Length: 428
Image 1: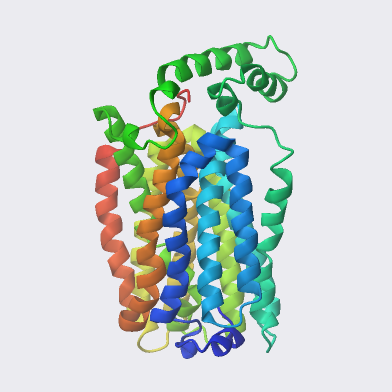
Image 2: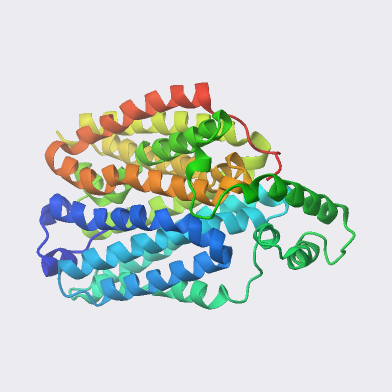
């Protein structure tokens, strides 16, 4: 969300729409995606070569560099460069971090804990939203420099703590450090009991899986994702999840203040407050999805979550079409906003907790790092439509963009119903 000083400082167009729209803003947003797409090609190999902690550490270095660059930005070139570095950090942190949480979690907690990994990002959005309400009243560059600088804090935390947290026991065993891996399992899965049944079972499973898979390929080889029919089907599910998640309509939330302007929310401060409320609703959705993931299953969450997103978007889009662009109707505009918030709830309940755990569960150990990296690459490539094309489309067709996403959502529901499989309750 963009304040007036931000728009005027960088000479961005679309100031009257409540937030920047057009090709310049699209390019700034798109640099993040470009950085992610490039870095993700190395994210899997880095996480396999240097461990999950090593991948998170490298990601935090890029995040620190990117956060500092956008905070001290003097012109649009700084924003593009900083966003590119932040995109690179996102690839490394998402790949290494999601695998770390999934592999460190006890089997009975894998769904909720991995889901929480994504939900924490929503909490960060709430914090940044609250900060922008305060800084949005400023008439200086501090109104956007302060929110940008907040990115440095979590990056510094990962940079520091990645040295002290335990390494993934699966990775330790895969590189021959079996005693260290067993010690981690004993402490965190067996409550200190080396003879705990769960520890013995996991060690046996890891050992058999690694003997079967890990020795087949060098760390840089992605061919394993397509070697057999089973591998190709697993990869297809990752591809489908990436496209469904990115094209469900989440791109609209990046420009919520613009949509609120279409629905006659006229003051910038009120738009910022409603954007914060939307973030809180999204966080509740992510938390709900994480908590019910194991109970209802991954496939059910995916399908019914996407159906719910489609219905909410249809109602919000229809109300915006009838009441937002034409005559002012408070009830109609409020309905459009309410269902846009409901869309955020259903979207985050589905596509925040699902990708980290589903991609890890779809892939065997041999292909897990590269599979998660591939998901990140595909999601980033699909997101390029959101981050570059959405602001241009909003400027060109306005509220009609709703129906582009609705058309895809209907098609996605059919694909999910036909091709998705259940992965909860399976071993890693």
